[in-house]
Length: 324
Image 1 (tube, one colour):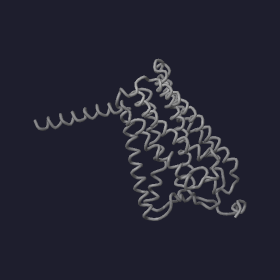
Image 2: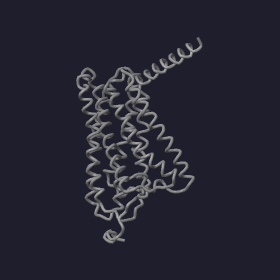
Image 3: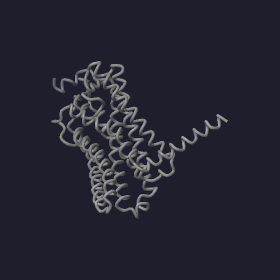
Image 4: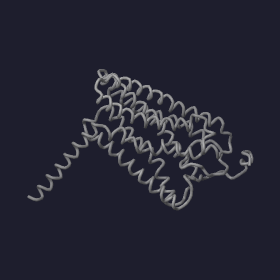
């Protein structure tokens, strides 16, 4: 049936998110897997925020940005995973059109904000490694606040345009979205309007939000690697490369999957591969960010050890007083 014929059909009031397939056994397995992922994501990121806020020694630019990243990842995961978990638990995969557009709006805003924030964090590391004598002067408190605020504001502004354009499309049927959350291109496939211009605008905005931050991030780490190569100590080089490489792998995985889905020609991408890429930047990245950026960091480990010893001493003192 042509799109013109759909114009005379009933307007869609809800969508069906098909997710990863049907079957009670598969649904049960996916529910447990995504539930554990969500619990770990929220726990680890909340822990990082609490640690950065509570410890004065971590009140420096690097951990200010890490706290922002942890907060962003909590919002990012909470926008997608709870709705997915509920659908597996209840078996109801329907979502109203308004809620679908709302989910897409916050997903796009948070994804764009993370692109900018990861670029800011890479620039912060570039200044710390390559210009250590000028670091505190260049990355001052005011600039930290401005860069953090700019990342969030830019992300929320950029997707407002796309959400307005997509919500203005006509949806006459069918209403089954071949995805696990409300995303732009899967929704556009269901529209009975001409989506050519909206698709081009979506790719353009996605490119602006992801390509320049990706290039800035890659350039920053390239200069960092060059600087590390000049370290005379082989132990120092190995330690620096270990930290830098883990950061770079996560960042490249995040940017590359977003670029592959939204900027590169997407018509030839199989839907299964589309979903795999989407899992990478919506579920996997928020899960591994606190591990890669924070829990492997020596300063964080020292702070944890100090807090652990202090907590143990308080508990021991409490029980000692009770026994007296």
